[in-house]
Image 1 (cartoon, rainbow, N blue to C red):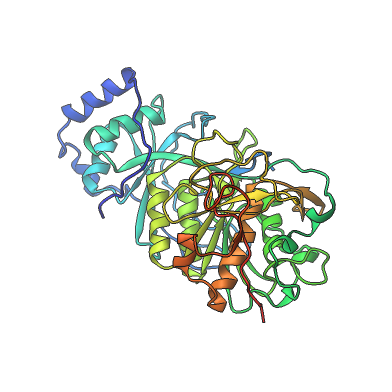
Image 2: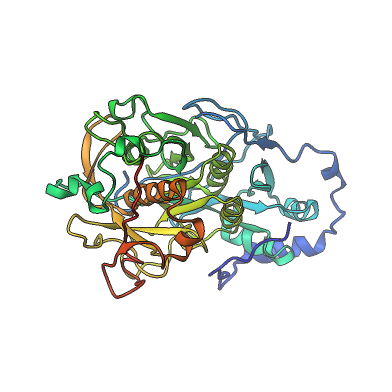
Length: 450
């Protein structure tokens, strides 16, 4: 499959000795110089099936890879290279694995050339629902990921990428104040919300969810974990908050927007040794594949990270199947670079509003902002059930997911209406029309939930 164009990519400005050594190897060894590749068990395959399943200010992140097998709230199986593994280098602080590259639908020749300078395939993940094949490669000791990518691009441009990490777009807890505890009222959500979501399946890509909490007891909620290392520590604070905002049950004290919806929660997040919660690009792709296979109509991604060609291709496949994707615009402030996946074409970016309809002071701004929704000082439970007010563009995502899904279900608006934006009923909060702070404004779609 031809690789899709990748926006805003720049190559390294300077290459060290590692690049020259590897380039020499690429040109010195002929492509047919490793005949043993044809017979060696180089590629392990993991087929993702349908199945069950804060950091502060952009805080919790995660690394996900994983699996062809798994159950409710369980860890998926993984196909690992049976050979001995080299010691891992420290993960770089700038958002990617220092010891890996990933590739989208690489040819056998491309993998052979990578093997010539020591890259070793540790996983091949076929996402049948999206029609993509992602290969994860372990780098040899002493070769960092940026150098390896530069070398790989010498012979196979546009095939390989860094294995980027993505983080949840949440921020500090704060004291709940008055109307901020009643965010549904700000967007004229039906008072009889106990019926909202009936006949609809929603998807989120987030951290873990504590499904046994009182607010979620009785909800149609399935969680599946997608991480490479089944033993990697996870976290349930952020995912539990987002799930409760969507499907919190009536009478629990924390009613959600869509309590009658079926919610499928993909968990690709885990903690790095540094304590940072992240999700890697492969885990995100596997999560999307499972959600599409589960029949979701809208997917919420309350996370941010850098551009990545593999993730971009997967999201374009999701959109081609008629599924809308919502993502947080990030908490980097007005001068932050565009966050992905919100910056991708067709992904609807959500920013956060306070009770007095001011934009969240840490929210990123720019062309990625499509709509503004409640997301400041929202009372939500953590994984232990402790209710605290939380803020961040993460928490605006479930409000937009709910509006999208219910309006599509009732036929009030179409997918094209939402993607165009101009025809969506809103309270315009900034400059007339769309602006870089509020996007089109606060959606107020006349849904009934009848």
